Image (tube, rainbow, N blue to C red; front, side, top):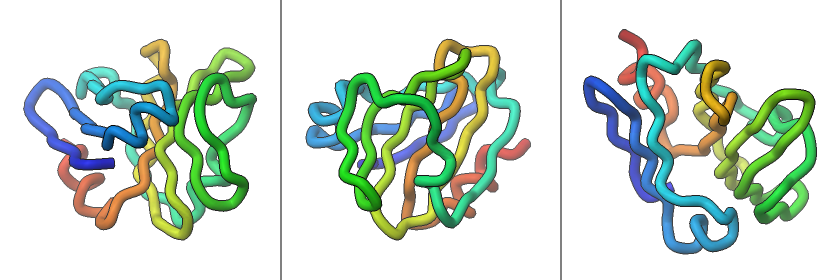
Length: 113
């Protein structure tokens, strides 16, 4: 993740060129009204389920892309041994976003009203 910004209406997660290419993704725009919960996790790899389609997966290291299964769609940008922000958005097509960050606690605090 290059950067994340939060305004009154949405969360914008800007991805690096590498992340965009390897994950077949663009910058992520999440309406704040669609966010049901925000949590910080120590092991983001354990938060993924389903099958990757499309994206990059290096087991135990990097996961970038979309995971699908049983009525859910998860977009992940995960790096090895970093804590992550998990944003649940059950009303959107993408039901969960998992993004590693240097300071996920500060980002989570910015998202809680």
